[in-house]
Amino acid sequence: MTEGNQINRYVLRNRILLILLLCLGGCGLLTISSAKKKVKQDDRVYLIHADELRYNAYGTYPPAQIVKGKVSFRHQGATLTCDSAYFYQELNSVKAFGHVHYKQGDTLSLDCDHGDYDGQEQMMRARKDVVLKHRRQTLYTDSLDYDRLYNNAYFFEGGRLIDGKDKLSSDWGEYNTELREAVFYYNVRLTNGERLITTDTLYYDTKSSTAHVVGPSKITQGKSVIDTDDGYFNTNTDQAQMYGRSTIVNDQKTITGDSLYYDDKTGQSEGFGNVVYVDNLNKNELQCGHLTYNEKTGYGFATIDALVKDYSQKDTLFMHSDSMKIFTYNINTDSVYRKVYCYNKVRAYRTDVQAVCDSLMFNSQDSCMTMYKDPIVWNMGRQLLGEEIRVYMNDSTVRMAHVIGQALSIEKVDNEQHYDQISSKEMKAFFDNGVIRHAISIGNVCTVYYPIEEKDSSIMVMNYTETDTLKMFFSPERKLEKIWMPAATGTWYPLTQIPPAKLLLPQFVWLEDIRPKDKYDIFAWRGKSEEAKLKVVERHAAPLQSLDDQDISDNTIKKPKTQR
Image (cartoon, rainbow, N blue to C red):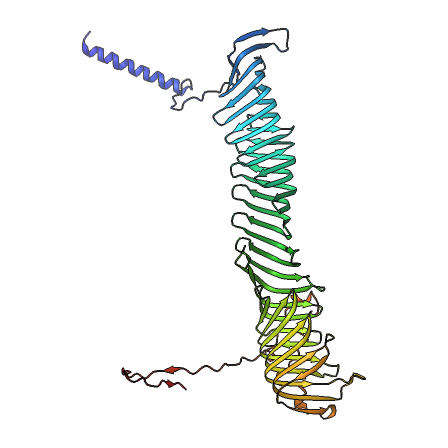
């Protein structure tokens, strides 16, 4: 056969094979694919090793293989070892006894005294002295069911989970090894150092060390106690978030709010929604819609219907402003003191005293409360106003009041529009047990005074006086005992002969409509009219001096010129 005939036969044979392959492929008998076939996972439980094996065909139903001594099983990547076991090959299950150890991957292991493993359900039922370890978490219980399909471990006869410093215990619960989340029910206790959480339902995320309590719960740490129905606590960062009207009690201080946030490391706390802060030691209370406070720096801020109650005295003082701030100085020392700022639209009410101003500051260092921008104070029938009013306290009672700039004191004498009036540059009033005993008016003093007859309490005359200084002394019953003044000019007018221009001082303004009527009226702001506001008094500037532009010789110093 020639070489050319051999080549032709080879080509013809390859063509025939190619046609057959194409025909088989078109008929669906042959499919060419680059994808690899998926290997089906074996569901059977395999006995790997046993020192002794005995088959009991009649002693148990279904028949079991009885194995002893260093027994080892394998199922879908997991291993089970024990001292002895019943191997039900038909049911694909194992009953294991003595030093049972189950291991799945590199992160999960389970030890118990005895247990059942079902290969069909992929369920491990462990009993007595059960220890489940997953990563850094360890679960101790006496009865546990581990579901491999859903990665859930259930305990129902009491369990204890250890996660670093966190220790949790409850009557029953579950732990998901994939999500690394646990749920505990009934008699739940979580301890972390000095912190103890007690509740009936707790969700715990081991990845973030976050605990979520549901239902009535209590958290205690030292003198601090927290009550909440819905709270989140991060045991690593010591941060807490509480909802559902929660309360924090720290020694004699209590804070309640619809939502509370707390960071133990930074000392920052924040409350939203009808927040109530109570200081039982100093007998005061703060209510607002939003409150922030840092216990390490002593800074606090309150806003939204901010209201302060002081019940340290017989009658409670109520004060409202748009916002309030507190600054603490020399905190955690013996020389600690605080400054409290209230602004704007400050209104205060107590049965014996009321006040209105634009802003207020209280300094605990000298127990001084300073009122700014058109302040007004009412005490009984007396009205006091000026550019600035300072009130010095002594154990929450007034020790001294100081009115600075355009001071004006007005007291209504009767219902016939007769008023005792004093105007001056400044006034000082001194109190004893809250009762005025001594008053001083200084600078450009003008007075309108109606003496009252002791016999019938009638008014016969009016006295108008101008002087430089006026001192008045009062009895414990608030009656005027004596008056002292230097050289003065004055006039006595019978009631029927009082000149209209002398009835009221030029600065007179009666602001009864602005006065708070009760504790609820402090939220209704009523400011002064433009006519009633104090006029700005220009201060005389000190004269300035300048030197001549000419050079000053070494021997002569020229007298400076005064600028006019």
